[in-house]
Length: 176
Image (tube, rainbow, N blue to C red; front, side, top):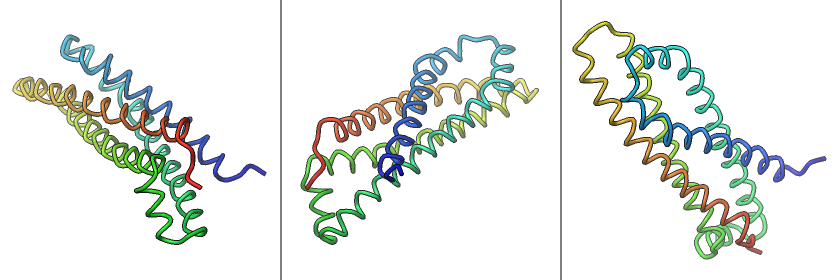
């Protein structure tokens, strides 16, 4: 039988790789170039390509968060059983591993919320491109600029999260 910690770690890590890759490709490749594409190309992208890709990225992001939180809770419950609340507090705030995991989790949550904002902007763009109103062109440009800004912020936050988590699981020993 596979221990729960390994299952949580594998699913969290695998889904995190997919989510991180999707965010980086979108933030570094697609978002900066949206303004350069023709309206017809953008319309097709927003109508056919981006909705399922966006739904997939959101689902993988949620999977990453759920299994990461499960992994975190699994460790914290183990520390609580060994020494109660004081040990959990000590592990989180007095060890490099705990500080790295806790700060990575907080930054990751903020990064996910930025991703939700990006999804909201995408939904707005979907509606604007489907609109036949010519006055929506100015609003489209504003939303595209916000999308580029939030994509950059999201890339930075998720990169920081990944670095902290890699540091915690690869180089910092688990507290004893």
